[in-house]
Length: 325
Image (cartoon, rainbow, N blue to C red; front, side, top):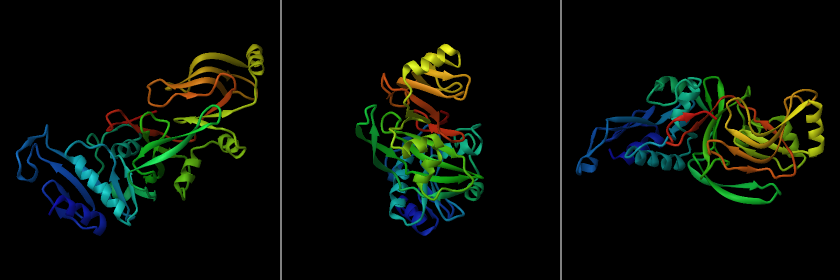
């Protein structure tokens, strides 16, 4: 069979098939490339090592879990054909890098599929699709600057979705605050039920103070997992608390323990009713350069709060390794 036929039969009809480098049974579609690769009977190309990678798995709930990791040539061509096939299929699907699923499965101990492949029978049983993806696409996002002015950017999405891994739900999406065309992440939702829509899953990530501020119409902004809510406190009010000893003023403050987000100016409350709160102004920078700088302005202060999530896994610069933010 041609590779196209093997892929189409698996995705649309749930059947197996045997091609030269793409093969499937009714549960598992994969690509296998020999060390001496000879496409269509032409001259041979030497691949570094024989390689095999899963392209898609049919889960017990009937959904298709598609490997969204960036596979090397020539597997990438097979992967592209799978992504096109699921867009024409009526079957629910989720496009998630299998490296990230390994990270979630092992609680971050492993971050590569080849280092700790999950048996297909376990993957089919323990993973389910809660909110299907819309496939690989480009989408427009609207962002606001410090003055509330809007601008539109285009980000690349693997297909926003929600999956269950074992007993936990994870949102799979592209963070538009990431540099370039956005940054992929898989984050655990701290909830006891599956969200009914992708938008509801995003709301699960927002702490109540953020949701309340949005209801008021506040210009809430975000960099990665950190939200910035504009507040009415003046500099003199905050500095009086610093003089009283209930807060401290810092420049170039790093958020969180071993964090990667740096505040240009910050006031941290150490005591009193606001203990633990962090207020900031100036530029919020990601120290590894993975997110766009967030300019909060030099005048108005913002309450900076972390989102509500469990462990999160992102793709590193190579596009193949799960990493932690």
